[in-house]
Length: 323
Image 1 (cartoon, rainbow, N blue to C red):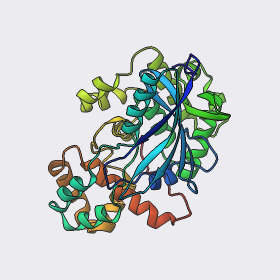
Image 2: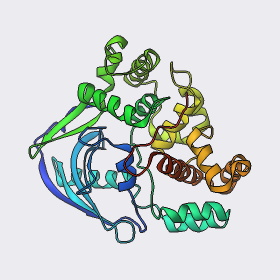
Image 3: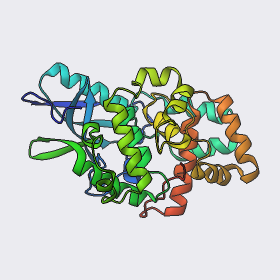
Image 4: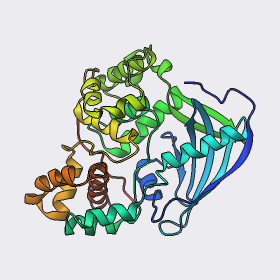
């Protein structure tokens, strides 16, 4: 992965209106750390997001503001690219990252036709959705770090990884970041990674994931999404990557909302809060069968709701448990 755009860059305006209702800032507030690149940098006061977006194999700096959520959403800002054509490719990639074309209202109607308790849940968060990662490698690294750790701590550790091993690009006096580069992690001593707050197993797992990417052993996005079950099975052959981690990574890169880790603790507790402990597990199966390609968003919202109640508005929640 290149560390820069590789050619002189120019500034281009970018603006688009996601399909309403659209809500992305609550996700950013929960899954970023103030002032730390994770690799996103997000200012909740100004609703300003800075990131590097991966478009056609190139990392492009982007600075955005999120306005009018959830019912009159507008995303606008600046993108730096060598040409207008590449800037347009970056804009299209941004729409994928924030899932701008997803029709939440249609999703809500389908959920409401399935279960009244879930209907109340999805109506409580109009338009909310997680972002999409456009790299299976990056999604795996993120998922490994979040294994069995409080989210606040996971974000600090990931920020250290980004600052030491990640790509960075300067534009207009600002630094933009991307995930830890595989070529920087592949030959690293796991002991050095442990200095950043990683466990022995996670440090070794990150090196293994990076080597698999460098050596071409990780599937590309199209291949991974063509046969998700086989992809998950294959990923679990990597050291330190269990089913929970593989499923979460696949959910992060998918354009729709596959189910993700059914055994996730926050999901189970969130469903229990919504529909009762006795119905939670049975309802999870109904979501699988009744909402193909959408069930993962239901479980995300259940976990988001649970963590929000547990952590409070100003306190970051704990990451879900898994291996």
